[in-house]
Image (tube, rainbow, N blue to C red; front, top):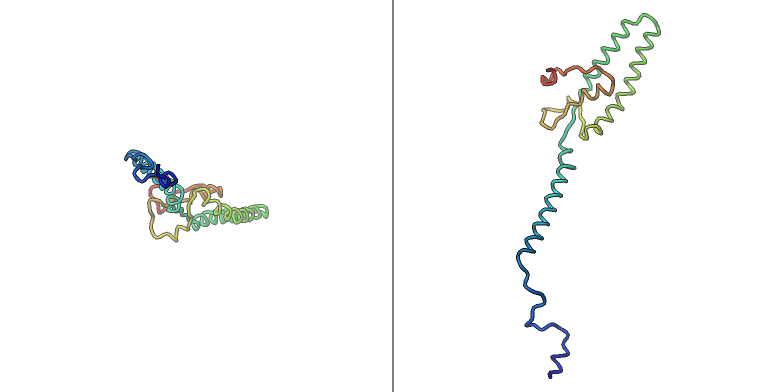
Length: 152
């Protein structure tokens, strides 16, 4: 019996530590990793990228013109001080509700909201939010002159 051979703590270099590894487990792990990566990319696209590409436009000038016409009409029809005061109360109410309604628009559409006059051209991801703003302010909705689709 060899004293030095039995005292060695290391494995015998002629015997493998584990059995042969097949190709199937490696392919299974690679497929699973690929599935996780693809799922993560799809979720990132849906949650981060696509909402950032969506732009809402609002024509505040049109909303102002409509309210101004309504205010002018009420003021010219006013025959008493109470009627005039009612018209001024309407203007005050509008001036208080407009900033709040504009702040709510990005939350409602989950998009960036810009003035319609600041947009050079429309894209498929551009959403016109003027009607929603009018609805929030209690205006009657009228079709936009620049958008023939909504006029139909």
